[in-house]
Picture 1 (cartoon, one colour):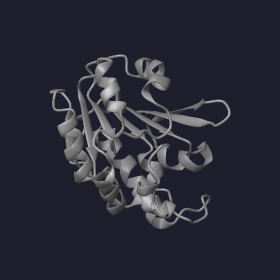
Picture 2 (cartoon, rainbow, N blue to C red; picture 1 turned 90 degrees about the vertical axis):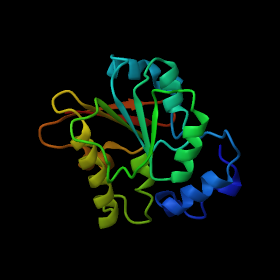
Picture 3 (cartoon, helix red, strand yellow; picture 1 turned 180 degrees about the vertical axis):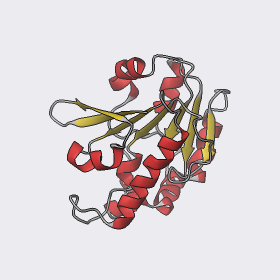
Picture 4 (tube, rainbow, N blue to C red; picture 1 turned 135 degrees about the vertical axis):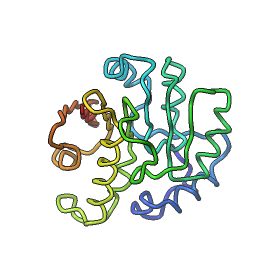
Length: 207
Protein backbone atom coordinates (compact mmCIF):
# COMPACT_ATOMS: atom_id res chain seq x y z
CA UNK A 1 0.00 0.00 0.00
CA UNK A 2 1.19 3.57 -0.61
CA UNK A 3 2.44 5.65 2.31
CA UNK A 4 0.00 8.03 3.97
CA UNK A 5 2.25 10.88 2.82
CA UNK A 6 1.29 10.33 -0.81
CA UNK A 7 -2.41 9.60 -0.37
CA UNK A 8 -4.77 12.34 -1.65
CA UNK A 9 -6.85 14.46 0.71
CA UNK A 10 -9.91 13.76 -1.44
CA UNK A 11 -10.70 11.01 -3.94
CA UNK A 12 -11.18 13.65 -6.65
CA UNK A 13 -7.41 14.25 -6.64
CA UNK A 14 -6.91 10.81 -8.21
CA UNK A 15 -8.22 12.37 -11.41
CA UNK A 16 -5.66 15.20 -11.54
CA UNK A 17 -2.23 15.30 -13.15
CA UNK A 18 -0.86 17.53 -10.36
CA UNK A 19 -1.60 14.87 -7.75
CA UNK A 20 0.17 12.11 -9.67
CA UNK A 21 3.22 14.27 -10.46
CA UNK A 22 3.50 15.18 -6.79
CA UNK A 23 3.01 11.61 -5.65
CA UNK A 24 5.63 10.18 -8.00
CA UNK A 25 8.12 12.88 -6.96
CA UNK A 26 7.60 12.03 -3.27
CA UNK A 27 7.74 8.25 -3.56
CA UNK A 28 11.00 6.44 -2.95
CA UNK A 29 13.03 5.27 -5.93
CA UNK A 30 11.98 1.86 -7.15
CA UNK A 31 8.50 2.00 -5.60
CA UNK A 32 5.69 0.39 -7.60
CA UNK A 33 1.96 0.31 -7.08
CA UNK A 34 -0.67 -1.85 -8.76
CA UNK A 35 -4.38 -1.18 -8.72
CA UNK A 36 -6.47 -4.30 -8.28
CA UNK A 37 -4.88 -7.57 -9.33
CA UNK A 38 -1.18 -8.28 -9.87
CA UNK A 39 -0.02 -9.93 -13.10
CA UNK A 40 0.33 -13.34 -11.46
CA UNK A 41 -3.39 -13.17 -10.59
CA UNK A 42 -4.44 -12.58 -14.20
CA UNK A 43 -1.55 -14.09 -16.18
CA UNK A 44 -3.53 -17.13 -17.31
CA UNK A 45 -6.30 -14.94 -18.71
CA UNK A 46 -3.82 -12.57 -20.36
CA UNK A 47 -2.14 -15.50 -22.11
CA UNK A 48 -5.57 -16.71 -23.28
CA UNK A 49 -6.66 -13.27 -24.52
CA UNK A 50 -3.28 -12.31 -26.01
CA UNK A 51 -2.02 -15.59 -27.47
CA UNK A 52 0.64 -13.92 -29.63
CA UNK A 53 3.70 -12.79 -27.67
CA UNK A 54 4.54 -10.50 -30.60
CA UNK A 55 1.31 -8.49 -30.25
CA UNK A 56 1.80 -4.70 -30.10
CA UNK A 57 0.33 -3.70 -26.73
CA UNK A 58 -0.62 -0.20 -25.55
CA UNK A 59 -0.57 0.23 -21.75
CA UNK A 60 -2.93 3.08 -20.84
CA UNK A 61 -1.93 5.18 -17.82
CA UNK A 62 0.92 2.87 -16.87
CA UNK A 63 2.01 4.70 -13.71
CA UNK A 64 4.69 2.79 -11.81
CA UNK A 65 2.79 -0.49 -11.99
CA UNK A 66 4.75 -3.72 -12.45
CA UNK A 67 2.26 -5.01 -15.01
CA UNK A 68 4.35 -4.08 -18.07
CA UNK A 69 7.53 -5.40 -16.45
CA UNK A 70 5.89 -8.71 -15.54
CA UNK A 71 4.34 -9.10 -18.98
CA UNK A 72 7.71 -8.32 -20.58
CA UNK A 73 9.35 -11.04 -18.49
CA UNK A 74 6.57 -13.39 -19.63
CA UNK A 75 7.54 -12.82 -23.25
CA UNK A 76 5.40 -9.84 -24.29
CA UNK A 77 8.18 -7.56 -25.52
CA UNK A 78 6.30 -5.14 -27.81
CA UNK A 79 4.74 -2.98 -25.08
CA UNK A 80 4.20 0.78 -25.45
CA UNK A 81 3.53 2.53 -22.13
CA UNK A 82 1.83 5.92 -21.86
CA UNK A 83 1.03 8.18 -18.92
CA UNK A 84 0.32 11.90 -18.66
CA UNK A 85 2.81 12.26 -15.81
CA UNK A 86 6.21 13.16 -17.24
CA UNK A 87 7.63 12.42 -13.78
CA UNK A 88 6.69 8.74 -13.79
CA UNK A 89 7.51 8.23 -17.47
CA UNK A 90 11.04 9.51 -16.85
CA UNK A 91 11.36 7.26 -13.76
CA UNK A 92 10.09 4.17 -15.56
CA UNK A 93 12.17 4.77 -18.67
CA UNK A 94 15.26 4.93 -16.45
CA UNK A 95 14.20 1.94 -14.32
CA UNK A 96 13.64 -0.28 -17.34
CA UNK A 97 16.46 0.97 -19.57
CA UNK A 98 17.59 -2.64 -20.02
CA UNK A 99 14.26 -3.59 -21.68
CA UNK A 100 15.16 -2.24 -25.10
CA UNK A 101 11.96 -3.27 -26.87
CA UNK A 102 9.65 -1.51 -24.41
CA UNK A 103 8.68 2.14 -24.97
CA UNK A 104 7.68 4.93 -22.56
CA UNK A 105 5.82 8.06 -23.70
CA UNK A 106 4.35 11.05 -21.88
CA UNK A 107 0.83 11.03 -23.30
CA UNK A 108 -2.79 11.54 -22.23
CA UNK A 109 -5.13 8.58 -22.84
CA UNK A 110 -7.73 11.10 -24.04
CA UNK A 111 -5.36 12.32 -26.77
CA UNK A 112 -3.31 9.35 -27.96
CA UNK A 113 -0.64 10.45 -30.42
CA UNK A 114 -0.34 7.22 -32.41
CA UNK A 115 -1.71 6.39 -35.83
CA UNK A 116 -5.02 4.63 -36.33
CA UNK A 117 -4.99 0.82 -36.56
CA UNK A 118 -1.52 0.60 -35.00
CA UNK A 119 -2.04 -1.66 -31.95
CA UNK A 120 -3.28 -5.20 -31.41
CA UNK A 121 -4.21 -4.78 -27.75
CA UNK A 122 -4.86 -1.90 -25.33
CA UNK A 123 -4.92 -2.44 -21.56
CA UNK A 124 -6.47 -0.17 -18.92
CA UNK A 125 -5.92 -1.26 -15.32
CA UNK A 126 -7.53 1.43 -13.21
CA UNK A 127 -6.86 4.49 -15.39
CA UNK A 128 -10.47 5.11 -16.35
CA UNK A 129 -11.43 4.60 -12.71
CA UNK A 130 -9.19 7.52 -11.69
CA UNK A 131 -11.23 9.75 -14.02
CA UNK A 132 -14.43 8.66 -12.25
CA UNK A 133 -13.60 9.87 -8.74
CA UNK A 134 -16.16 12.65 -8.68
CA UNK A 135 -18.47 13.08 -5.68
CA UNK A 136 -21.45 13.16 -8.00
CA UNK A 137 -24.09 10.43 -8.27
CA UNK A 138 -22.51 7.33 -9.83
CA UNK A 139 -25.77 6.73 -11.69
CA UNK A 140 -25.54 10.20 -13.24
CA UNK A 141 -21.86 11.19 -13.59
CA UNK A 142 -21.03 14.82 -14.38
CA UNK A 143 -20.48 15.82 -18.02
CA UNK A 144 -16.69 16.07 -17.58
CA UNK A 145 -16.45 12.46 -16.40
CA UNK A 146 -18.61 11.26 -19.30
CA UNK A 147 -16.52 13.28 -21.77
CA UNK A 148 -13.18 12.06 -20.38
CA UNK A 149 -14.14 8.39 -20.35
CA UNK A 150 -15.78 8.60 -23.76
CA UNK A 151 -12.69 10.27 -25.24
CA UNK A 152 -10.41 7.57 -23.83
CA UNK A 153 -12.50 4.79 -25.36
CA UNK A 154 -12.82 6.70 -28.66
CA UNK A 155 -9.03 6.99 -28.83
CA UNK A 156 -8.52 3.33 -27.93
CA UNK A 157 -10.91 2.23 -30.67
CA UNK A 158 -9.11 4.50 -33.15
CA UNK A 159 -5.64 3.05 -32.52
CA UNK A 160 -6.68 -0.61 -32.31
CA UNK A 161 -6.57 -2.66 -35.49
CA UNK A 162 -10.05 -2.97 -36.96
CA UNK A 163 -11.39 -6.50 -37.00
CA UNK A 164 -8.67 -7.95 -34.76
CA UNK A 165 -7.96 -5.43 -31.96
CA UNK A 166 -8.83 -6.11 -28.31
CA UNK A 167 -9.37 -3.65 -25.44
CA UNK A 168 -8.90 -5.11 -21.94
CA UNK A 169 -10.18 -3.05 -18.99
CA UNK A 170 -9.72 -4.29 -15.41
CA UNK A 171 -11.73 -2.47 -12.75
CA UNK A 172 -13.90 -2.84 -9.66
CA UNK A 173 -16.64 -0.93 -11.52
CA UNK A 174 -19.82 -2.93 -11.97
CA UNK A 175 -21.31 -3.41 -15.45
CA UNK A 176 -24.23 -1.00 -14.96
CA UNK A 177 -21.68 1.81 -14.38
CA UNK A 178 -19.12 0.88 -17.05
CA UNK A 179 -21.00 -0.70 -19.95
CA UNK A 180 -22.25 2.68 -21.20
CA UNK A 181 -18.68 3.73 -22.05
CA UNK A 182 -17.50 0.45 -23.53
CA UNK A 183 -20.36 -0.85 -25.65
CA UNK A 184 -20.09 0.52 -29.17
CA UNK A 185 -21.71 -0.46 -32.50
CA UNK A 186 -19.69 -3.01 -34.42
CA UNK A 187 -17.84 -4.32 -31.36
CA UNK A 188 -18.33 -7.29 -29.07
CA UNK A 189 -18.22 -6.76 -25.29
CA UNK A 190 -17.55 -9.66 -22.91
CA UNK A 191 -17.56 -9.19 -19.12
CA UNK A 192 -15.82 -11.54 -16.70
CA UNK A 193 -16.28 -11.36 -12.93
CA UNK A 194 -13.14 -12.02 -10.89
CA UNK A 195 -12.49 -12.53 -7.20
CA UNK A 196 -14.55 -13.95 -4.36
CA UNK A 197 -15.12 -11.71 -1.31
CA UNK A 198 -14.44 -8.56 -3.35
CA UNK A 199 -15.31 -8.61 -7.02
CA UNK A 200 -13.36 -7.15 -9.91
CA UNK A 201 -14.43 -7.12 -13.53
CA UNK A 202 -12.51 -7.67 -16.74
CA UNK A 203 -14.18 -6.01 -19.71
CA UNK A 204 -13.07 -7.40 -23.06
CA UNK A 205 -14.00 -5.36 -26.13
CA UNK A 206 -13.21 -6.95 -29.48
CA UNK A 207 -13.13 -4.76 -32.57
